[in-house]
Length: 194
Image (cartoon, rainbow, N blue to C red; front, side):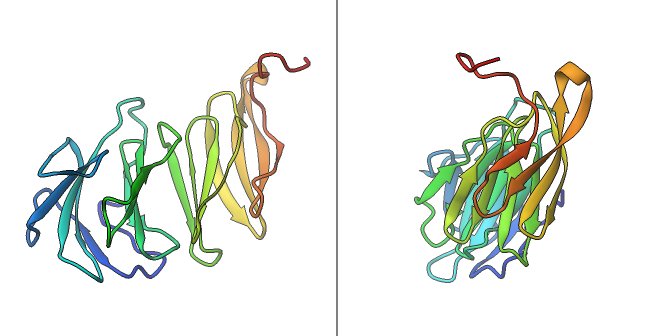
C-alpha cells in the first residue's frame, strides 16, 4: 500500500500522511479521539471542508507483521478509512469525534472500486464491505486462515480462501449487494451438523 493518503472517491476534504502536524492546532489520538494525545501508528493531517485542520494519530495493531497500512477516502466522501498495521478506523473528517473501529482484526487487505463506490476489507477469515451509507455487510467465516487475490467482477467479489483440510486455496464468491457467500471453506461452527 501507498505511503500517501489515497482519494479514490472525490472526498470533500484533503489529507496528508505526516509524522507531525504542520498547520493544525488540534491533535487527536485514536481509538477514542482523545484530545492532545498521541499513539504509535499512522499520523494524518486533515483539512476539512468545514472547520479547522486537525491532526490524528491512529494506534497500530500488533496481531500480524503482514497486516496492512492504508489511509484514504471513503465512498461517502466525508469519512476517511485508516488502517494502521491492521487496526481499522472510520472517521468523519468534519466531526472527528464521530468515529468507529472496524470490527475485523487484523485487517490484511483492502480493495477499492471507485466505479461501484465500494471498499472491501478482510482479516484472515472474514470480509466487510463499506459503501456510501457505511458498512453494507460483513461475512461470517469463509476461510480457515487466509484470504488473497480479491477481485470485483460486476455484481460479485471473488477471493481465494485457505482450505486447511485440503492444504490448498479454493474460491469463495460473495454477492456484492447482499454479502451472501457461495463456496469458501472454514471450520465447522460448534453445534452445527457435520
